[in-house]
Structures are given as C-alpha cells and as structure tokens.
Amino acid sequence: MLTLSSEAFKRASDYVMGNARELERSLIMDRFVSPCDEDVLRALSKYQNKDGGFGNALEPDFRLPLSSPMSTSKAFEIIKAHDGPTMAQPMIISGIRYLENTYNDDRKGWYAVPKEVNDYPHASWWSYDEKTSMTVIDNSWGNPSADIIGVLYTYREHVNFLDINSLVSYAIDYLKKKESFSSQHETYCFINLQKSLPERLSKSLDGPLTRAVSEQVCYDVARWAGYEPRPLDFVNSPDARHYGIPNERIDENLDYLVRALECNDHISPHWDTSDYVGGLRVAINEWKGNLTLRALVALDSFSRIEK
Image (cartoon, rainbow, N blue to C red; front, side):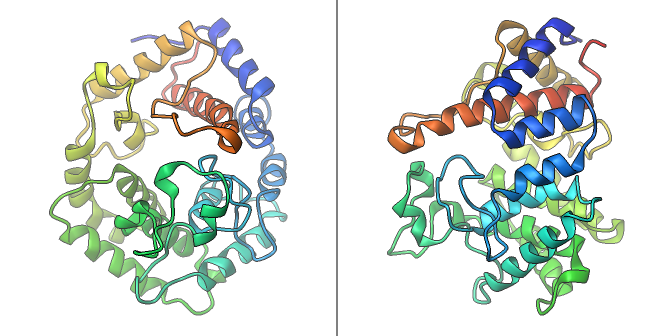
C-alpha cells in the first residue's frame, strides 16, 4: 500500500494552483488549506447564465457559452457539497428553474446539450446530429437525466411543476429493465442519483448498479493508460458503496495514482485528444488541472497522502 509523499503532494498542489482554472484552485484550497464554500461558489457562479443554467465551458470538452443540462448537472455536483452559505440559494433556485424549463416530456428527461454546441469548439463526441436531433451522448438516457433527477430530489422544495417522485420511479424502472450496460457515464449518473435518495429508494438500485459496474470496471492496470473505467471511478470514498469491487482492486487503483504523481506533478487526460485543436486546445490544460485535483481528493479520501 503506497502513500503519496509530502513532496509529491506539494508538487501536484502547486501545479493546480499555478495552472488550473480558478474553480479548481478554489476547490483545492477548500479541501486542503481552509474550508471556504463561498470562494468555491463565487468561482462556480462565473459559469452560470441569466437563464439559471450553467455553460461557458464548465465542461472543458465543449466551449458553448450557452447553458446546457450537462454543464448544469456538473455544476450541481459542486453545489451539493458547498450549499451551506446563503449565496448558494439563488444559484440553486435559478438552476432548478432552468432544469425544469429544459425538461423534455417525450424523453422523460433531458438532452445533454442544445444544437448550438456545433457553433463552438467541441470534441467530436459532443457534435449535435441534425438528423437524430441529439448527440451520441444521448444514446444513454441516464446521462445526464438520472443525475439531474437526483439534483431535483435533493432540492425538491424548489421544484415547481415537475413530479419528482414520478421521475425517480421512472429512473429506477429504467435501470432495472436494462439488460446490458454500455455507458459507464450513465452508470456514474445513476450512482449520483442513488446518493441523493433515501435508503428505502436507493437500495432498489443496488442490484442493477452492481451488475452495471461488474460489466464496465476494468481491473487490468496495463489498460488504465487508456480510456477505461477504473475502480475509483465508481467508488470515491471508503464509505461509499463498492458495487462488488474488491478492496484490493481499489488499493491497486490508489497505488496507481500515487506512482503517477510521484513521477509527475500532474495527471494528463487518458483519452484521445487528437481533435483538441484550435479553440479546443485550452481544454487539455483545463483537464490536467481537473484530473490532478480529482486524484489528490481521491488519495486524501482514502488517507493515502503523507501527513
């Protein structure tokens, strides 16, 4: 069992502070220096639009300034962990209003991004297809719909016209009926939904999520340099549900991160970035800051940083 040295931790945290976006810098300060929800929310608020949704390249892979359900769901992952201050309330209320306004009744959920995504630099997987009226991401209903339903359940006192209980039931039934699980990102969204629900509802997702994870998780360390879902992508803390992932596999993943950060001061994207050119090139450095922060948070969660 490896532990990240204090020297390597300093190099990585210095990298984030010197190269990452203001948002990631505020998050690393909040986690490792001094808790400050207000600083995190202030940095996040710069991505929120007047319609209440979030955009402005919060998700680095598409530079769309307009709001999108996908970016808004990502924003709420941060808000939920920092929603104590009074300044969070208008962000939450306007964000919920946006999500209600963009709900598609025929889909019983949300499409990830609007068609205007094509007008701005974006990775190929975010391209909007005029023939199908969606992106390839939308082939998996739960990404981001399951995640958004979890957001609405968490802040249900601000939901005005959507039937949140009906949406939760629809999401649970959808996952239970799936016979195969092709999208790990959809699984991540259902894990977020499960964390938002009370035990009487969340436990009904244990079986299908365990099946999904067993189909998707990659235990072959040699393949982790590519775009493969690793154990820590599903289990982000010792207290989280493990979905059948053995502790030793989680330890292997933690050791992998320690070795990576002992050798380098940052984590680079482990997926194909060949189309990150022109106006999208900036996303590479943004991802480096984001992934390095994520690695440090994971190691800290499992007490793998030398004190």
